[in-house]
Image 1 (cartoon, rainbow, N blue to C red):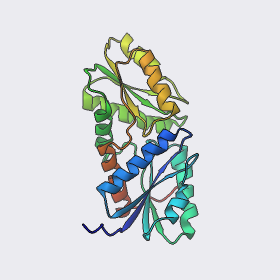
Image 2 (tube, rainbow, N blue to C red):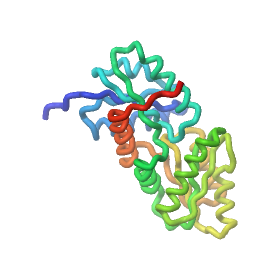
Image 3 (tube, rainbow, N blue to C red):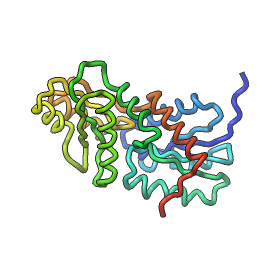
Length: 245
């Protein structure tokens, strides 16, 4: 079979981590998106630690049009400052670059993100769920995590509360303890993380130590996440975002 003709570049930009598992997970997601859309030249890039950097990934594309997709679940500092800076630096490249939204909840694609969270939960009869996230000092960004927890609660028809691995309370363990004190006996932890790393490990350890009976892995290359990335790309092609100054 003749390979599909490439007509669009897609650069998935992750924060980056010292933990090599994070880059492995991001690369797996990029490959999954590429398999689902053979006409896209898909690259993974990182703001810090791992390489390549976003500009290097854009330079490597064999096409003239590209979309940058922030692999972020909230629009905190990296989404508001670092990613727009990438686009500002891309102005001299021989490629036209559009910006997609972050992967966090929105009226159009939130169901895909919720389904990815549900499918990652281990098969167990649960009566409450903690949605554990990395954490941020940005109150607006935390409110979107709460939106995701509310959507997950509605989907599972179970109580769901948020927890953070850094920057804001409560910890996953504290959230599990609160749910158990309120009467829950089988509490699970859903992972609002795209890839494994220190913060995910801390959240999982904290939840288990408090009695969580199930801990989900990060979203990784979950099929629903692949579809969500594709939806972000397609929306950006139709209506590119104007990066913040």
